[in-house]
Image 1: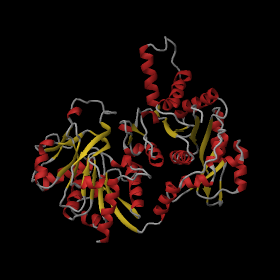
Image 2: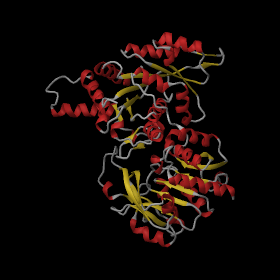
Image 3: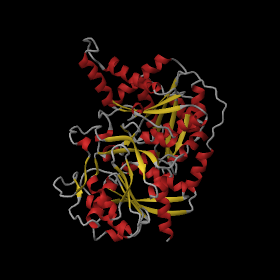
Image 4: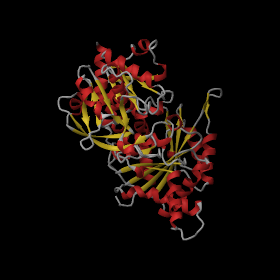
Length: 538
């Protein structure tokens, strides 16, 4: 192919949370399976620089890339579907756009001109659309626009797309518009009017949708496709049904059945006779839909009311479950509901527990109590980030006998700060983008559980934290049975703790869930699920 890439823009209408990220990732998977080099980027219209300072209830999980960028959770879908590594250029926000323009204005780069949305903001958006090509040479670049058409925040992005398509000429780009076809049970039919209005709103901005993808809970009839095509200015083949699926991993197969990839390539004037190779993907979905056993894993966290808060963890369990041919029922447990009276009733019903990442002191004692239960009852345990830190506190209190052991995040006056602020964080005042972020090396101890899981002595994992295990307590912990099985080779930071006398007990300072994909499920999750299956069999 020509080194100049083709561009696909994915917009949304009628309602948020229709799954633009899944549709984008599914299309990219289909194109990748035909031999194209594809990447996806997400443009978010909110004014925050990134989601790093957002409450999980506001925006769901904050995903972290290998280069330490805090991003939208959709980048996790891109990596999980495509087995690619995203970076800072894969996610742009209105905040980043305006910050760049204001910094340029302060330096005098605009030579005294009035700075305006058009052309200055839209030019910066267009520059960022193409910026990702500077990292690598792609055949096709998919850009997902966050929000819905008609949102005031989205107008500059839609206008930039209009200009950009004009700049690069015909057959070099297309727009896919994802919309909702609501089903009215009283009338017993799907309604197309919201879709018509949404497409009309897009056209008012000077952008025509080339393909309409319709989210629906009922199949679309032939007549309905013709009606949508007529009113939305597209040919009938460009009306694509996206019916509700049992799992997001079925969506690429459903989109293939709808010939979305063929329609896209035809509209971009790309000739490709290679057949899609999705055999591995189909095998994965088959294992997912036909498990041989079922286990229950308790997810103990502070934000369990919103599933997106722990999106990567939930998807990692899906990947690990398929490998183990098991259905993993993740049981959400709010840490504030765990106490001496409720704990036996809550945790006696699960085959393992995962104590989730988080910040702040709310619900901490419930997490510590849950870890104590897992340790004393030989229940498989995985602690991630804050979960690992709570495991250290629990062990220090109940095994080392340091009853006031705590983290300086929760208690600055504790006499036994077994978890403390990292040295390089002591003088940090700004909250955004200042944690220990991105990929860091971890050296594993031979003859440890961690080593048997990874089967190598040096690994790289992604981080997002400010606090660490206080090294002056490390020797005491090791002596009484909680060993440090993974450390950073340069800083000595303890990355992994485990209890060898336990059936399966590991706490990790990093976030393994950020690197689990369909193609390469994370070994820690695979091993944890396997341990939970053994517990269930017992």
